[in-house]
Length: 96
Image (cartoon, rainbow, N blue to C red; front, side, top):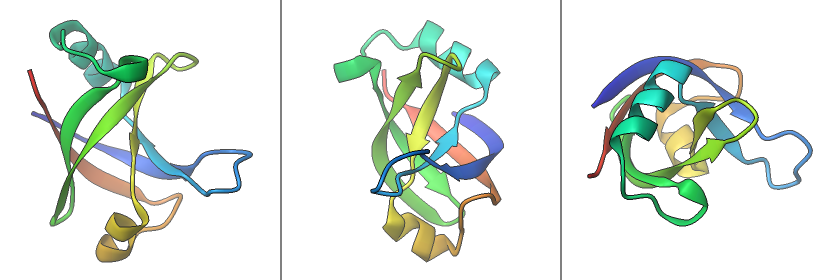
């Protein structure tokens, strides 16, 4: 299980307003070293939690930063009342 705080941000240049949280480098490196079962594009299946909201998703590797990116659905943002630029507490559980 991984616990950290990070800012919610919007993917630049897109029209869909995809929101993400960057998994810190230390946690990303640990996940990469421990998880052998990866899915398409090197994604890793996780259970994510922000506040009281839990959901299943995948984190995706970002080759530019060497970290993983956690997509945050609009439903989760609404339920937790969070917007881009806000720092949030995150809990990630990986499978495998």
